[in-house]
Image (cartoon, helix red, strand yellow):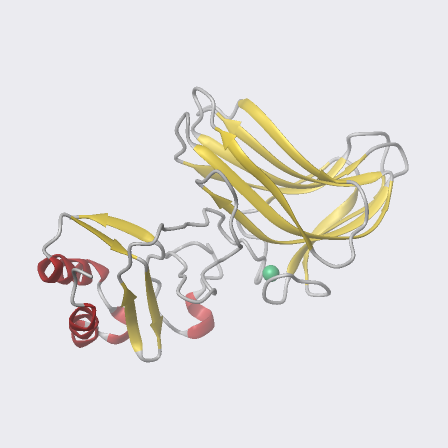
Length: 261
Ligand SMILES: [Ca+2]
């Protein structure tokens, strides 16, 4: 192992100013200590003891979904409803923490109507490979199905490609839907991830709880994680109105990231 990890951790703790620690200072220290061209920081854990840094060579992961667990509200998830139904945060069922997104359909005028919410990730480029996943508890249905939809969009919002993964039967508790290995086509700048309860005929009904949404730039969606997962962090502003800082009182520090000195 080329680096003196104990020394790095000591330096970072010594220079840490509790919850208002400046990440740029930490990176400067690591560069000086390691004297390497490329530095990979695995995670930064900030709690009542101050921040702890893990410098590892493992592949990094980032969950690009904002508000992936629906714990406070539905910020960043836009509603789209054409059937008769509702979409709301609900604490009756959850896969991660205590809240999920509950999609309800009580009637439809035909096939293809929806009760849904979607989130949009920006900053994509063509040829990038993306994967998404969501935990689904599909408790009741009649002429309906759940869809995890990925749509690659151009800068104007026009759909360049669509990839659906469907659940057409009820579940026994939460199961994971994986929509993996999707390559962004030419002109892609955005990815829209939709959580959909969709009718397959008229007079459809259904109830589905969705939670733990993951989107990562990878050929497969790995195990779900968010800022509450051990050694993971929320980025500042991920929750527009209900920042994760308010929960544990610690400062927002960038989560999984990579630094090239
Ligand atoms: Ca949750």
